[in-house]
Image (cartoon, rainbow, N blue to C red; front, side, top):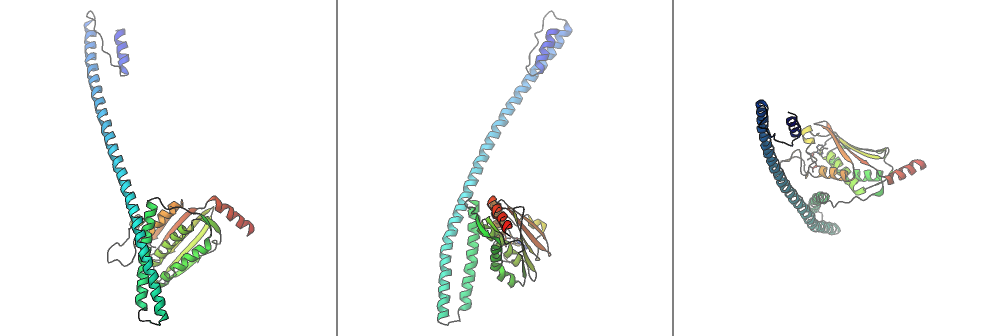
Length: 319
Ligand code: ADP
């Protein structure tokens, strides 16, 4: 009996052993040992089957993983080709377009010199359309560059107040066109900071031009503050607003609330995706709160680097 208990004890941990039945053992013991041996055999067979199924599963998982890796690599490669293609084609498109703009300017000057005013409107239309096309091409180039990982961050010492005023001046015609009022909160934007000027300008410009575009007879305001070494830009408008459902989608490239061909507002659907990507490149984030028919508020927060800290502390020491 002691020997049987010992075999059972070892088998408990998975090392299945059979009991050698002694011919002279009591019948009851022989029966117990017989049933036990049958149980051990079926447990062994079951384990064997489970091991087989596990091996099969592992092979399938390995196979699927390698297929997925191949698919992912192919998708990444295709995306890289797409970004390269976009970067090249937009470059090719920009060059002749800049030449059209240049020659139109020459024609304008010649007409002015000759005092011919009949074609003024037509020449103006050529310039406006070519400018629009150039903006579009530049946006596509920006997206392609960011996606291809070719957009570099270049920090430089800039006057934030001037940058905000420049962006406001650029969108002023659009603001006026829709009979809007532009408010700039300049209280704390006199600082010099180290930041990527071009990217912050582009972010501001895109948000301001959207605010001006989607607002009529209302107000567009921009607030810029620096607190605890974080730059916070808020662009608010009292325009048409964006539904909660659309708020989740509009940061994707080419997304517009009204994407139909007959839509009221012109645009490419690239402005906000450029804003979010540029902000992320600067380690910042974009927040949006909006209500239909009430207005929208876009807030961009960007952490300022160590270099800005020394400039800002010198500023406050001297000021
Ligand atoms: P675009 O303005 O060229 O269409 P954007 O990416 O800048 O592209 O914006 C995407 C969409 O988000 C816009 O088409 C518009 O529907 C919505 N949107 C963006 N900004 C505003 C805003 N300030 N007010 C209302 N809708 C907005």
